[in-house]
Length: 134
Image (cartoon, rainbow, N blue to C red; front, side, top):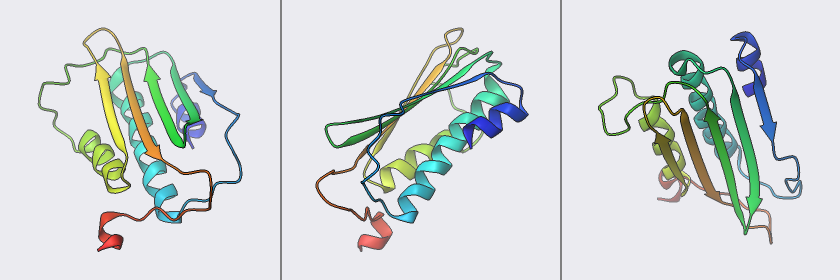
């Protein structure tokens, strides 16, 4: 998905992290919310960053999935109010899964979005959103 978006925008794309376990199951809702959050981050780079490269990193360490979307674009002051809902939606989606989404950016220094989600390896899991758990 990220490769297709970047290809359409003619933005060089690099994917790192091919040693992910294949035996961990997550719910379709988890896959959907995580995919939509990553899609929003990639879309923001394409639309706003003026970047010449995007790197998507995936890692699974200590029962935690880590996703990082990094660009070398214009960056922005994270303390300033933003007009859209994209950053808020990414954080909301990850929080609904029990994860976190942090945004590190400074004007002139690019942006890195870091998403973390607990994914235990010892058994197939069904991560439930808050609405499902209630």
